[in-house]
Amino acid sequence: MFLVDTCGWIEWMIDSPLAKSYSRYLTSPDTLIVPTLVQHELYKWLYREIDPPTALTAIAATQTAIVIPLDTSLALLAADTAREFKLAMADAIIYATVRQHRATLITSDIHFADLPHVKYFLK
Image (cartoon, rainbow, N blue to C red; front, side, top):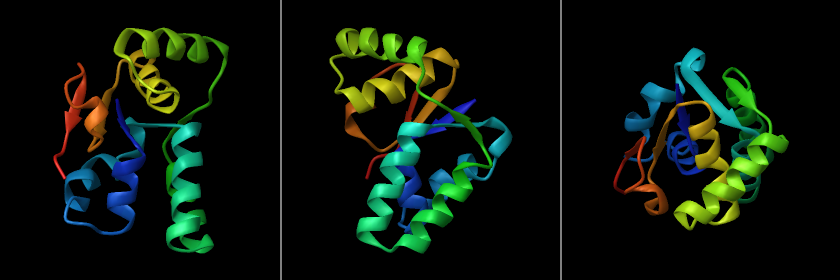
């Protein structure tokens, strides 16, 4: 299982030089998990920076994967994860989702670069 964080989705949606690196993960919905937090961040960024139709297209793409809602057990794991790895709330929720689902985080976010179970693409 893989979780592509928000920065990866954005790189893919704007067809940046890193888009190909993320494409392999984002085009395999049967092995892709998407936290609702990533949906929130992605929609917010694309709506603001590009336009509402692009934001909605991205959310439709996320819904082909396995969407993981934030529930109590994940919230508590995220709190423990934040403390353990000194992560901000959003990053802790994303990384806790990775831990809970025994997935690999695919990212270009430097906050995750040295953590276990992370595939990091340098920007």
